[in-house]
Amino acid sequence: MIQIGAEAIWRAADRKGFWTCLADRMVVALREQAAAQAASSPRQIIRTNTGNGLGLMAAVAEKPGKLIMGVKIVSLTKRVSQGSPSHPGVVVLIDPVSGDPKVSLDADSVTAIRTAATTCAVTRHVRPEAVYFTIIGTGIEARSHLLALSSVYPKARFTIWGRRFKLASNLASRYACQHISVSAEPDLMKAIKGAHVITSVTAARSPFLDINHVDDAAHVNAIGASIPGLSEWIPESFRNVDVIICDTVEECRRQSIEIPDDLLDAAHNVSAVLDEPCWKIANLNGRRSVYKSVGSAVLDVAAGAFLVDYLQS
Image (cartoon, rainbow, N blue to C red; front, side, top):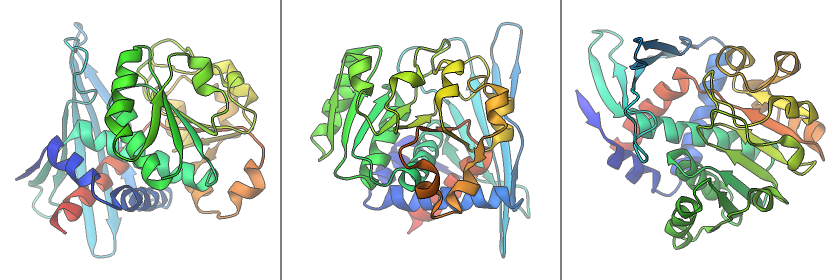
């Protein structure tokens, strides 16, 4: 079985054109899922009474002449220290004929890059003119989102805010020397004010962000709270959003407590938004929008297969 570790994945992410190609592949995967050409199981979490356990997500994607199968297995333990992987585990691609495992990829890195690439695909579609970006968070998802968005928006200016300013400053300093216009801001309200796009990628258990504090025509990528029990944004503040987009409305209902159920009744699946080129102009001009992501095994498996092909090219 081929093993692809984090170092190889991040080396690939540094190649020119990587993020655009992966974002395009994530769009295809979302469309395949919407057309029932790809399917995934709901995220399953198995725990003992001590809180330790496993997270499981499986998917199958079928297209003419090619069948992709895989599963993501993530370790969930209470012994997690600062700087530890947020998704320690593996994404395993399976031979559809023999059933044998073909490829094992680092789950933490695959999750980070597929999430950022999908966010990038949505953002470039609904806010192609954006210049000022704010990233809330300092972990691996903040890193991947900074790389993905800056590759598609090379002239953009990025601000990073984190609860620990030193971590935000370190992340900004690391990439400021790589031709990315990025700086850290210790004041959350200053970081948000004037931003065209705000992307939150924290593991907050209690909401600390308010939609009412973002500009009236801003776009928010609410990425961090992807399982029950986590929440970055004050749920009731979503009532002041004009357009809500979900990777799938059904999965957002099942896996997140962040957006009230009655608001999800009027939300849009992201595949429908991406399929309509004029949608952004007709529906978002001067309006506040949110993209809520909870993730999908279809994206994990598609990203894993993409990486295998990309690294072999």
